[in-house]
Image (cartoon, rainbow, N blue to C red):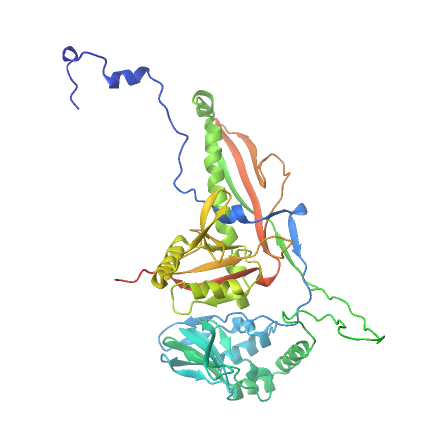
Length: 464
């Protein structure tokens, strides 16, 4: 840019004056810093010894998982044999040859929308695994009206009574909500495999024996209690049985090595300490990764460790008030909802359609949107699939309420923040200082209903 001749100016140019001035500057900024509400809202338990054991009552009822399906072509859809153990009757069965034989009995069936796959009250003549699509579970109410019991989708299975009961009946009607591919195994073929495998027969007999034991509504071993009696009847004794193989959570770690040249630390440390600023941004990055791991880690992350009985699907795709009401109703004392910002926006759109106003609540001085008085916190680390679907989590938190708790250990050597330490590693031959920065953490679900997930939430905005 051409400068104005000195003789035409009456005062010092501002660009020249800046050479003698001290600029006002900010500390280094970072775009990737998020609110990290999950880290802020979880109650944290100090784990001595680095391991946290979750003791529970003995459970007789076996949970239902999801069967994996391979799709190698339009006409080649198959069950992955090893995942058949997600069916309750086959849980713990370890003969791969028999599982492969059971998997070979499944054949693909294409189902059109509104087609009935199984009708309530009719004999269970097949076991089904959903490869693709969604099915509605329907029932008839006490006054003859049609009741919607829920939605099941890919990987879910039903009809495993065909393996264990003599004259099973469908408890509800399964109707296709979308076009579906359902893998079907006829009951007579499953029986044939069981008749030819003594190991499978023994396994099914043990399964039925466990199911016959007294249990409460959550499937836990029953505790006998006398009530409503009068006089002096003999009162039976009892005990509370414990799970012999409780889960143990070991602290995970996120680490990085921060390097700073000694010349930078010596000569350019005013007015801001270079090591402190480098360390501040490094810790932010570690904390961001920590929250991502708490959600997405396959070993302990919440999205992968939520009980399948605590997972539900939306009725129609986008997250509606009805969907969130159902999610909240599945547990007592839901403390918070966690959702991707785009899922929150999709929920607001559904509320706008119904003329509903979403409330808000104060959380630590911040105004946060709330539904039924439960705060909805944004979290961009909840993944969005290629089909533009995501998940919404509902959590009960704290040890006293048998909820979800964060795990860390305080008092570690050279601790910089709770559960995080910075250790000087020395100076190399190039005069570069190194610091090992480590964060130790994990998360535990104390009982299955402490967390629930609304899955396959459609966040795509409809065209006007």
